[in-house]
Image (cartoon, rainbow, N blue to C red):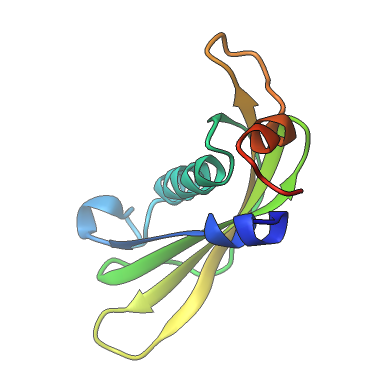
Length: 137
């Protein structure tokens, strides 16, 4: 498997319903909760790609383009887009769908950066690990 195939295979999608207990006084999804969900899905994609311990080191520019109201469904999609020696980056997109109508649009986008670590919490080389696993770069 080459890098592009591995990136595609590690794409991760999670769906959630937006219930009133997850919304603010405007009846839209809490921004902090949206970021939390995005970080979790990004973490899963990063881990599926690398099969290493991963920790978030940054979230870059999160754009809230549309509110996400209660009573909708969200789909959060994370894709690995860049791999370095010890870090990898994921792009995450949060889509909103109306439950009872044929409607879907992008609501939030962001990028999350992770570092691969060992048992002692020291950075480790992602390419070296992949080579040991028989990955073709």
